[in-house]
Image 1: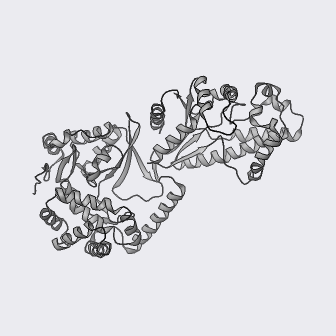
Image 2: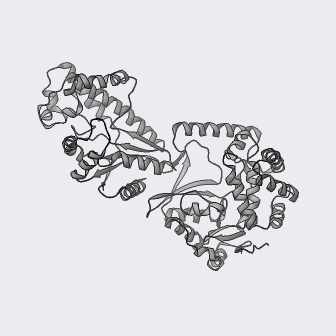
Image 3: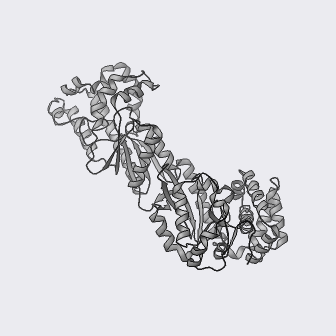
Length: 522
């Protein structure tokens, strides 16, 4: 069995108990290096070692520091014999299992997401029980060397990784198999300088002759001359044609390791390309939690940070999950309401007393007198909201996390909610207006309830100060902030979990609180 001189670990065919006993003394001095890493990630790796779970961070270790800082996925290879224990460790550390919404996952591979509590950043584990590789989409080759690879490990930054020779072998084959089709070639060469940099890092650490011997032992059809040519072609950024020729040669020699035949491979590739295009068009992720999705609504008085926190939440979670951000306070127009919406700016100029803000004034609310124009507009707005929130419910039912800026309350008269109570109906003499009021009330009764309400709060002086700093049409309006204060302070949703968040604290601290609240509810 080969040993590497740079802190490698000779594991052999160890059982889990022997692996655990040898874990602590085997670590090199690099384990103590001060590097930026998330506590959640360190705890996960420590648990894997302590429980004797056979594993390693099997690829892209040139960027291991980025992975430990949660800036990149953690690519873990785990022995199939330790699968049950591995899942238990993930759940013990608060990780949540995911699945591909479009069905583009790979056999023996799954994703799990956790949260680093200190920073409220998402940790993404990409776990492999089988090494599937090849092009970036189909990964049509199963490389059945998992146990052999787990016998060729060392420590880097305190994490178990393959020896440089073992990683160099896999790296060369992975890059070669990414040069067998036009889409794969395009994807592999978009940022090729990073590929050449990784090869340089591996070559500097590895003994090339040992890597050649290891490649021949693992993959007898890949002889040393072919392996050397492959390394030279990968090193030369301009040698695209050579890489393509060698890629086809490697693919042909490894054809016995294909997961799918030519026809099924082509169908799988087409489906994955279409899924990728849809994902880019929708600007949403593909992963959803196995526990399902939910609707998260951010509510609270004006200038408490609803839009800011909603956008930050969608950005942080949307980097890993299928997240749908919506604005229930300003729903998009539908086919029925598009023309009336176009006329709204002109109506505001012609009928300044009919603006929504005018009806929020205490004296207008006490009168309960509403013009036909206002009643019609509120009814159409209720229709648009119902369409938007029904779409949100469908998305959440399919696994998406819906982040809603504002949300209707069950309280009649609250902002973004039903406007007309029984007294308003009794006070209305117009059959048409009364019919429209009833329609508006019916529309609001059919709204889906949010699963989680984040009720944002801040002192009124703080919100007035924030509103004064806003760049908006008409400038700041302290009176409007005070007027809407009571209307927006008491959101009601009887079937929703409500969490109150003080947004007078620094933005980073508030965001961390919001992310933790959402993560706990998912």
